[in-house]
Amino acid sequence: MADIEIKNMVKLFTVLLLSEKEQYGYEIMKEVEKKTGKKVSPGQIYPFLKQLKKYDYVETKGRAERDKQAYYLTPEGRKFVARLSDKFGDMFAIAIKPKLTMCAHCSCEIYKGGYKERINGRLLSFCCENCAKGYRMLNTQ
Image 1 (cartoon, rainbow, N blue to C red):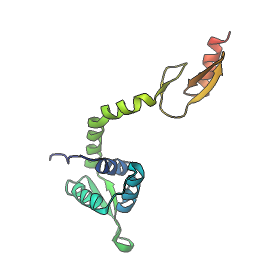
Image 2: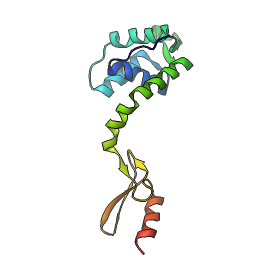
Image 3: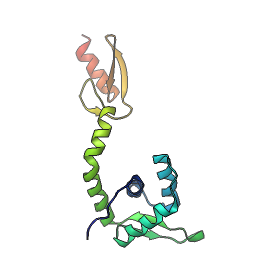
Image 4: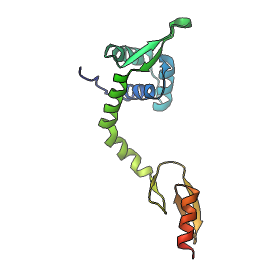
């Protein structure tokens, strides 16, 4: 069966959020609003969730108060998200690359966090304190 086309950020965020954990449609809607900074309507979320269910990419469970249903990805849905990740991977890499720093000791790439230390008058970035210690041992003797 052909994949569903993802043509907007609402749909992309919806499947990515479902890949993290099961969620109610309302939770997805609020989280997508938070991520995109734009108002998201139920008409953008629920028809897409219905389409995902038609393709056997999601299932639902529970009918608690007010007919709430939790949506979660099926194994086929996880494969679909993996294909999306492959498809959009290069685009994400381009967006993230300017935000990466390199560890001064081991040269691994650091996206967020890390450890900074001033050594020999230079402020350097490290992935961890152990790399800073290793760098100090090699470069301050």
